Length: 151
Image 1 (cartoon, one colour):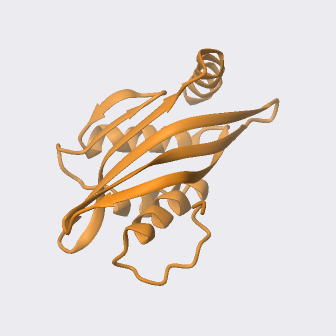
Image 2 (tube, one colour):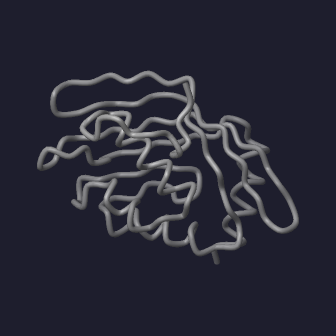
């Protein structure tokens, strides 16, 4: 099964619904939906190929604001994943297949991804994301393309 954000949400309290909402926010560049997906505390962290380590929602939101307002677009699908959960948290571990598009090029991305969610006021909120691009040449091309467009 893959998740890209277009899936129908049957049970809004499920871990799948939190993931669907994340990918819907990302693929539709919907900042408001992205903001609802994350925990807004200093405990939230993100470690990704573009921004290094970001701590707290205020730092994390800047990465999404730049991506969503840039000239490059990124479409992402989450697949080959497993969910590990307790009553108050879940961990989603898998792979992302992504397409980075600018007016001059398209780059296919392969990303190892981990997302951690906690229950906050009975709603799943993302507290951590880690993404890694294994191929060094692809990582360099991705960073150069996005960072050039973001600045």
